[in-house]
Amino acid sequence: MDQKQLQALVEQISIRVFGKPFRHTAFFNPRLRTTGGRYMLQTHNIELNKKHYEQFGEEELIAIIKHELCHYHLHLEGKGYRHRDRDFRELLQKVGAPRYCRPLARNTKAPKTIYTYICTSCGLTYRRKRRINIDRYVCGRCRSKLKLS
Image 1: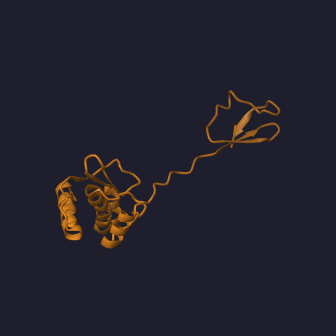
Image 2 (image 1 turned 90 degrees about the vertical axis):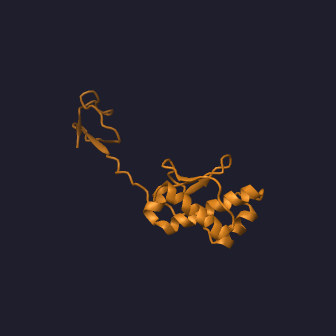
Image 3 (image 1 turned 120 degrees about the vertical axis):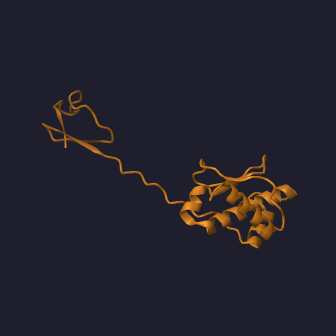
């Protein structure tokens, strides 16, 4: 979905669901990471997260657009547009928009490598997240050399 298709979709949903036109810009913001979209109070534009569209499809995108259009129309009418306001919650329920979007699958990081060093003399073990130079460091108990295991 490109910019023109997204703009047309938002305008169509606004007319069909709310009965009011959307006269500003809707676009995908690649910097959004955790939120599905956001309504900008100063410019009245709507920014959407393309990752939600790619991961969950057009149905989820439409739900997010409805949510953001609730913010948009209530703000322009001078009513309560914040999540905690009664006007907002009632309009969400009326149009069937979700209060929150589905969470994206997280990119799980690879588990950190734990380095284990063993004293060659007394056998004391040291566990470290960072690798150390065993030529420079010795056992704290007996001052013997360390060995990476």
